[in-house]
Image (tube, rainbow, N blue to C red; front, side, top):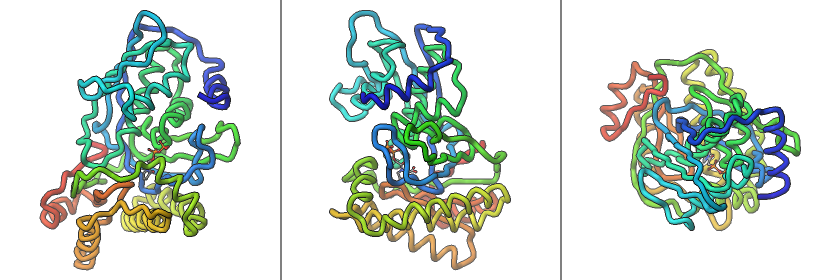
Length: 333
Ligand code: 2P0
């Protein structure tokens, strides 16, 4: 816990009343970025170098129950899908560090977190995990914080968690203040009920480098990274207006271009970050082939090997024939 984090939490909670209960409960959806967050301007506050934009996955995400335990201050007991995690596991350590920011709520917690997203599908669970934990904390403490404040607190756990506080299309404004007070997420746009996401789980190979280390390495060593914030901020604007206009081809093209540009900056880091596997590259080519044949389908890829397809309901049958192993998600269903 750093002084700047402590001050940040104090600022967010100033004015919030505490009405503490024994248990807090919350659900937060997973999200997929159409304009990716890649690179930080401040590590402790998870302040990004570009704005990002995502779509939340409806009922797919994380449900978290948070309970206060009696007794002396202790590391939290963290259960993931019913199993107690070793305290030195990376998720348990990150949860402990996050809860340490809230000694005014308690100093000994039990955290029960359940993901209903297949963990191997490459869907970030830290985003929904820290969003659900933040919302469960808000429930337990009875702060009654609104979405903007919750997104800023969730951001301290994981940058992408700031977007998982909301349903539907979400924008995370990078902000410019050094104290992080204007870097928050908020929803925009009405539901787009025809929007579909297809998950292609190509391999469950462990990713060699986590997102946090990967983005830091890219910022520090990639000469191409210098161009990324400008492209991402332009893509953000294009996506924002194309979503409001329901211009699907522009949404798809911009999201695909954004994801592949992020991968290009990753590959130009040193040592290189190559998250794509041979199956991923084969699938990128297949998406291009079926699109050349007239099917309106686009892809996005996160810091891993699996591919996510973007398409509209009217093409669900054709996409499922072209990609038989697809798992289709209706984010507004
Ligand atoms: C995103 N990713 O926008 C991008 C695309 C991965 C690739 O946000 O260090 O786990 O906790 O702030 O949020 C993953 O990064 O990183 C991520 P931290 P986080 O979804």
